[in-house]
Amino acid sequence: FVARSAGGSFIRTGEAENEPIGDGSYWKNALDTVMKKKNYIKEKEGKSGEFLYSLFKYKSVKPFYYLIALKVKNDDIKIVEVYLNNEKEMDTHINDVLKSIEKAK
Image 1 (tube, one colour):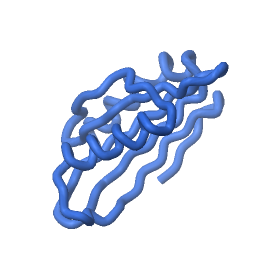
Image 2: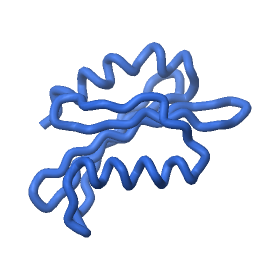
Image 3: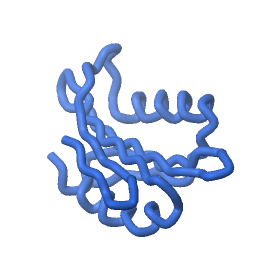
Protein backbone atom coordinates (compact mmCIF):
# COMPACT_ATOMS: atom_id res chain seq x y z
CA PHE A 1 0.00 0.00 0.00
CA VAL A 2 1.26 3.51 -0.87
CA ALA A 3 -0.50 6.87 -0.43
CA ARG A 4 0.79 10.40 -1.09
CA SER A 5 -0.22 13.84 0.13
CA ALA A 6 -0.40 16.94 -2.03
CA GLY A 7 2.57 18.28 -0.05
CA GLY A 8 4.87 15.46 -1.16
CA SER A 9 4.70 13.20 1.88
CA PHE A 10 3.93 9.50 1.57
CA ILE A 11 3.06 6.43 3.59
CA ARG A 12 3.73 2.86 2.56
CA THR A 13 3.32 -0.50 4.19
CA GLY A 14 5.07 -3.79 3.70
CA GLU A 15 6.42 -6.94 5.27
CA ALA A 16 9.83 -8.46 5.85
CA GLU A 17 10.90 -11.87 7.07
CA ASN A 18 11.60 -12.06 10.80
CA GLU A 19 15.15 -13.33 10.23
CA PRO A 20 17.09 -13.45 12.44
CA ILE A 21 14.19 -14.09 14.79
CA GLY A 22 13.56 -11.10 17.03
CA ASP A 23 10.71 -9.34 18.78
CA GLY A 24 9.49 -5.82 18.05
CA SER A 25 11.93 -4.21 20.49
CA TYR A 26 14.87 -6.01 18.89
CA TRP A 27 13.95 -4.77 15.39
CA LYS A 28 13.09 -1.23 16.53
CA ASN A 29 16.44 -0.93 18.32
CA ALA A 30 18.23 -2.25 15.22
CA LEU A 31 16.48 0.34 13.01
CA ASP A 32 17.18 3.14 15.50
CA THR A 33 20.88 2.25 15.42
CA VAL A 34 21.03 2.23 11.61
CA MET A 35 19.12 5.51 11.32
CA LYS A 36 21.46 7.23 13.79
CA LYS A 37 24.44 6.18 11.67
CA LYS A 38 22.71 7.67 8.60
CA ASN A 39 22.46 11.18 10.12
CA TYR A 40 18.91 10.96 11.51
CA ILE A 41 17.96 12.32 14.93
CA LYS A 42 15.26 10.47 16.85
CA GLU A 43 12.60 13.05 17.74
CA LYS A 44 10.02 10.75 19.30
CA GLU A 45 9.33 7.09 19.95
CA GLY A 46 6.41 5.15 21.30
CA LYS A 47 3.72 2.60 20.70
CA SER A 48 0.65 3.02 18.51
CA GLY A 49 -1.70 0.05 18.83
CA GLU A 50 0.44 -3.05 18.35
CA PHE A 51 3.19 -1.12 16.52
CA LEU A 52 6.39 0.30 17.98
CA TYR A 53 7.57 3.43 16.22
CA SER A 54 10.37 5.97 15.97
CA LEU A 55 10.05 9.40 14.36
CA PHE A 56 13.30 10.76 12.95
CA LYS A 57 14.39 14.14 11.64
CA TYR A 58 17.07 14.20 8.98
CA LYS A 59 19.90 16.64 9.70
CA SER A 60 20.17 18.92 6.67
CA VAL A 61 19.51 22.47 5.49
CA LYS A 62 15.97 21.41 4.56
CA PRO A 63 15.14 18.74 7.15
CA PHE A 64 12.47 16.14 6.56
CA TYR A 65 10.89 13.58 8.87
CA TYR A 66 10.72 9.82 8.62
CA LEU A 67 8.59 7.56 10.78
CA ILE A 68 9.10 3.82 10.95
CA ALA A 69 6.56 1.66 12.77
CA LEU A 70 6.75 -2.10 13.05
CA LYS A 71 5.30 -5.13 14.74
CA VAL A 72 6.37 -8.74 14.67
CA LYS A 73 3.66 -11.24 13.84
CA ASN A 74 4.78 -14.86 13.67
CA ASP A 75 7.47 -15.14 10.97
CA ASP A 76 6.84 -11.66 9.53
CA ILE A 77 7.58 -8.07 10.44
CA LYS A 78 4.79 -5.67 9.48
CA ILE A 79 6.30 -2.30 8.56
CA VAL A 80 4.84 1.17 8.07
CA GLU A 81 7.12 3.87 6.63
CA VAL A 82 6.09 7.51 6.52
CA TYR A 83 8.09 10.24 4.77
CA LEU A 84 7.05 13.75 5.83
CA ASN A 85 8.47 16.32 3.42
CA ASN A 86 8.98 19.13 5.96
CA GLU A 87 7.94 20.35 9.41
CA LYS A 88 4.60 21.68 8.16
CA GLU A 89 3.73 18.28 6.66
CA MET A 90 4.83 16.58 9.87
CA ASP A 91 2.71 18.89 12.04
CA THR A 92 -0.27 18.48 9.71
CA HIS A 93 -0.22 14.69 9.38
CA ILE A 94 1.59 13.02 12.30
CA ASN A 95 -1.39 12.67 14.65
CA ASP A 96 -3.61 11.19 11.92
CA VAL A 97 -0.80 8.85 10.85
CA LEU A 98 -0.36 7.56 14.40
CA LYS A 99 -4.14 7.10 14.80
CA SER A 100 -4.22 5.10 11.55
CA ILE A 101 -1.29 2.93 12.66
CA GLU A 102 -3.05 2.32 15.98
CA LYS A 103 -5.98 0.77 14.10
CA ALA A 104 -3.84 -1.36 11.77
CA LYS A 105 -3.96 -5.12 12.12
